[in-house]
Amino acid sequence: MIHLTKNDFKIEWYSGSGAGGQHRNKHKNCCRITHLESGFVERGTGSKSRVSNQKEAFIKLANRVVKWIMENNKEDKDINTETIRTYAEYRNIVHDIASGLKLPYKDIVINGNLGPMIDERRKSKGGL
Image (cartoon, rainbow, N blue to C red):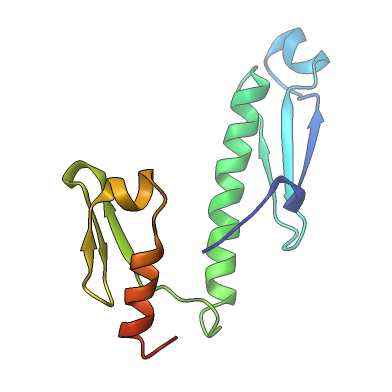
């Protein structure tokens, strides 16, 4: 699982240039986001809205960062892409793939009773 926090990014605001008139040229509504670890930079400048520009920049940057992380960790043994459990609220079922155990969604997720799933998983993996 990839886990990024806002501390992994640097967000800067600046005034745009070009067409757009006074709002674009005098207000700091253009966004530049830098991913600190990789050094990737993306900009959002397509709108007058700060929120839209930040969202635009972040979506472009997130795609690049995730791709970069996945490429750098292809041979990393610590990354496990195995599906452990499937959660289906609409069918009221949680299915542990390795052990085959199926329990009601309400008991596992709503009530927070994950113990039986973990115990069964340990038994199926030989006491892990």
